[in-house]
Length: 128
Image (cartoon, rainbow, N blue to C red; front, side):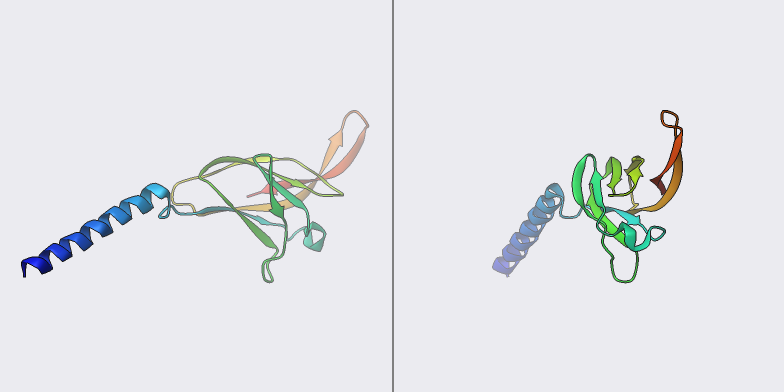
């Protein structure tokens, strides 16, 4: 009986150590994601490059039938920018925080007036 108790305590202790290591290592951290909905641009957006904090993180691709692509990020403040062959983009600063797991950004197109040339041009902007 004494031996059984020691085994139980050893297993409980090793489980506790494992749980602490997993928490310190980030295995229990909830993952955050920035999801970009490009429905308004349709298929013209597929393949556009996505930069988060000035690092290339991937391209816009269709996920199932939705016009959305997600990118995993750490918690905190991030700058998101789209590089499209035909459209400029106004970057946006966003924050992922707390219990919020996903941040949805919706792409739109807006006309921007260039005072230097006197012309307006369409650019990608973010709603959401």
